[in-house]
Length: 356
Ligand SMILES: NC(=O)c1ccc[n+]([C@@H]2O[C@H](COP(=O)([O-])OP(=O)(O)OC[C@H]3O[C@@H](n4cnc5c(N)ncnc54)[C@H](O)[C@@H]3O)[C@@H](O)[C@H]2O)c1
Image (cartoon, rainbow, N blue to C red; front, side):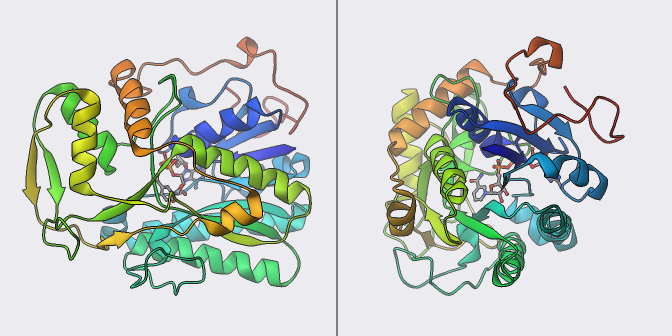
């Protein structure tokens, strides 16, 4: 299939791009690079620098695309609480322009990176896809709003989408060559590993008075490569005219923050200094997925456990303590094997296109 991955220079998008390429798909990446890294994009893919809200760019690229995998977005809960307008712009308004162009260009298939944050604070665990959605932060609300827009296009028959609600994504490409490089980093595993690697400062545990067995938040962790495999299956499912579906992507097992601290300490072979802080705004006590729908519809099962996630993330952090900083973005001339499509826009034909 000819796949356009938006946000393909980010953590999840870049690993999904490599996984899709390894399975014979042709991939173009559309990323503004405002929060991603050109060096994270596999040289076999076309990197187009631009926004998912850019009509002219989309009109040039979309006619050669079979499926859009939409990973682009802003992901910080705390930032979303401080700046709701930014989150509605990045996670709803700009992607809604892409949806408009997809429909006009006849691209009917979409895989969307949604989040467990759409559920808010559900009272029943594990969380099934038909649980009520009452997000407790702006980030979750902005992702849910885009889901609603997808539903409208599906109802008119203009679109078939697989909406993935990711739980907590962790890990790296298993040889440590690609991984998570957010700035600032709010995710627990990389934050712990940074403290472990530097030997400086302390990891702050946000909230120790939650109604959970050890007082810290409980989350469901999923390896980023298991996530990428779900995307590959979704692309092929839509290619075979699969019906629209919403799937949680999680392991079905919860770990408390204290358990994650212990796992990280075990993997790095040293205690990690921890200090206790107040709760973060908008953090529900527990989120654990039911992953039955993904199993039934896509035949997907997570294969890697928390220890593997931490081990792979640790390999990435040790090899790349500054993330992608200083790594060279691959040049087009260096990359002979780009596959047959989506067609690369001719160099210079698009003001906003920057083929690297
Ligand atoms: N990381 C997680 O644990 C997690 C959990 C649930 C859901 N998600 C969702 O998964 C997706 C990817 O997350 P990630 O961790 O890889 O994030 P990331 O920040 O690493 O990657 C996002 C990418 O999108 C790009 N981008 C942002 N706005 C854009 C725009 N308007 N046009 C083009 N490119 C744009 C950024 O430059 C960046 O490369 C997000 O949509 C997020 O909501 C992530």
